[in-house]
Image 1 (cartoon, rainbow, N blue to C red):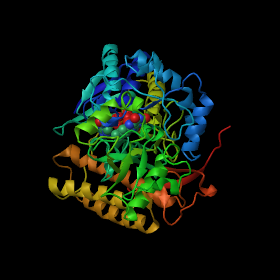
Image 2: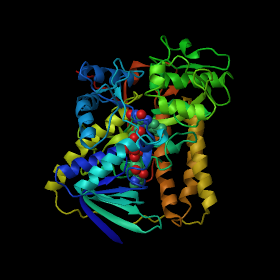
Image 3: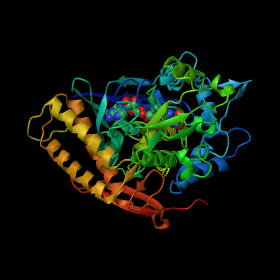
Image 4: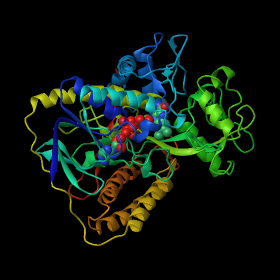
Length: 540
Ligand SMILES: Cc1cc2nc3c(=O)[nH]c(=O)nc-3n(C[C@H](O)[C@H](O)[C@H](O)COP(=O)(O)OP(=O)(O)OC[C@H]3O[C@@H](n4cnc5c(N)ncnc54)[C@H](O)[C@@H]3O)c2cc1C
């Protein structure tokens, strides 16, 4: 088997991975970044709208931390929340230092207020010639250039299928190329930056490579996960005339939701409506409207007529132009929007330096849990990727310096007995996505989750009866998907209350007894992972 070696191995080529690679390289480490697709041109960063939480002069670390903790319904890790807020100002400097151009008006960064934030602190990159659908390139291309300039090595088209252990430590990873060839990636420290898991669900706005691999890789390597029941649904996934995600900043800038009768239904559940509602509250309100038959197809109307001209011609100019090209004048016609799985609040347990519960393994970005609790505020995901990418990169580089050459076990996996066809495998993946969408969607119940777990068991039994065969990457990715999906179902089944993005029809109220997180660790052998409730540590 071929092998590659580095001080620091970064897995994932989105904002968290690129940032971590730059930070580790600047700290003097030899860095190898591997990515399932193309670094800088894959993952959710590519399609991110670019809303980035910053810390303008009039703002305070405390203010941002309070909003983030409150927005997360008081169960985020207070230390991580504080770290996020403290890192906001430097994150902006870091981006600009890498050559990212941020949108300015009269020389000043243009900060907008987005729902959940008490201040106008959300800034945006300058789009220039970059299409609005891939706005994230405004961030990744400068970072990619900076990483190359610094001498970070890149390997694209490599899917990590397993983390390698050297005794108690993670000592790198085992990866597969497109043709099924194995590679041992030996490293003194490893940073997981594989993003979230939106594509575990049938309805998602995530890119295709975001299949929740990191949760499964971390769990199998012995690392703990948390908050896996909290899946954020985006309340403004464009359905007609454009199938792109519409920025939630619109809700702070005058946009409102209306049902098929033109009613502003959000006002029934959220006093103050759209400008103050969280994404959890909006998606649950939309879901209820759809169930009551008051939607338009799979969605509801988005009324943009009150968005001021001054914003329609600056910040939203590319979007307005796109809508008009598709025959929808936002001043007169209403596009329709629906729900899509957008973001995973949960993930690998980390400390404030991105360190996991296993030595040698770090994490940054959406693959990690604890920063957002039960619900994420707009702009905080990109901030998280930068703040924790920088910290994980620096700490991993320091640790790598102290470590000897990694040894690790790099045996490729072999399992199962029977043959399968690609159609059967893709059918199984589609069935898994449907079951999560149906049973672990916006509104859940004990009955639905039990049915989901029973269906999951049938799919897992089928998968285990198959042997490792071509196309190997697709086969192994499916195994990772199954393990991550089980964590979501188990955590959603265990939490007997409604909080943030986790809404239980049978436990509709928030319950103080449940103020805390569910920690997931791998069970013995092939058994179900352990799910344990950990009461909340309150912020000082
Ligand atoms: C449509 C959309 C718009 C958004 N807009 C915003 C916004 O405006 N502001 C905001 O704060 N957040 C936004 N978000 C969320 C935000 O974009 C993501 O949380 C963030 O980009 C995640 O960055 P990341 O580096 O952790 O992961 P990603 O950018 O998703 O990158 C993950 C990387 O890991 C690679 N990978 C995955 N599995 C493997 C494997 N097994 N082996 C090797 N490589 C692997 C992928 O190919 C990819 O390169 C948006 C999300 C979506 C879907």
